[in-house]
Length: 228
Ligand code: ADP
Ligand code: ADP
Image (cartoon, rainbow, N blue to C red):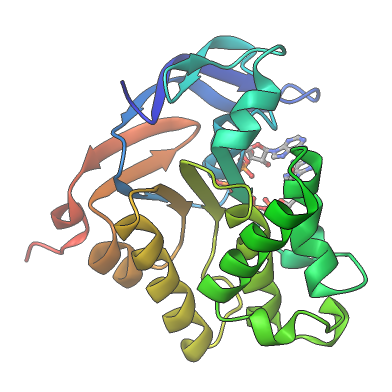
């Protein structure tokens, strides 16, 4: 079984833009994957298929052995958390605490269980002391960590991040990189898109290069090392 198994996926936007073109891909459980490629390569569209934010128009997507269909989408969302590029698209409740509670509450946990998963999730991103704050008053990097906590509170097997390093200062980048390392250490599969070649080379164990909705190359971090 793979974390993600994609066969011959194609996806076209309503204006006929072919964003994904006959793409196949397998991602082993527990791996750290960085997807790189120019703007418009199809990275975001692909990431949206990993948690059912988009459904395959053609071909198939399986997540932790479960085929992605309209029926399975709810189950798959519990297995796979997607952290958007912009935390303002994800973090919008009155307080940090309310925000992180939103997901686990929808899972039907008891109050006591909700409280516990939220404390663990906020603690693991170092934001527990900010729980009473309005997200509005946080820095961009702090909001990003709250968005990640909201995903972790759902206890996903797979965590997807769209450009997690974008717009973060070096300190914020180090914090997020350390956090991702820790999550992987806990056994979670981490898949992210990035433009940061140095980060990808030092962090990932699988590199996927995309262009024009296709996978150009897959390999280890050595793919990104210049050969003179
Ligand atoms: P990336 O994340 O690599 O920049 P995207 O998945 O965002 O790539 O985009 C892939 C292609 O699909 C691009 O040509 C982009 O312009 C197009 N695209 C993305 N979103 C939409 C949309 N909502 N409607 C039409 N075309 C889109
Ligand atoms: P990224 O490439 O980092 O995913 P973009 O800046 O390409 O983000 O896209 C931002 C938003 O604009 C997304 O919601 C995407 O779906 C939408 N978008 C991108 N390209 C197009 C397009 N050609 N037509 C319509 N919407 C688009």
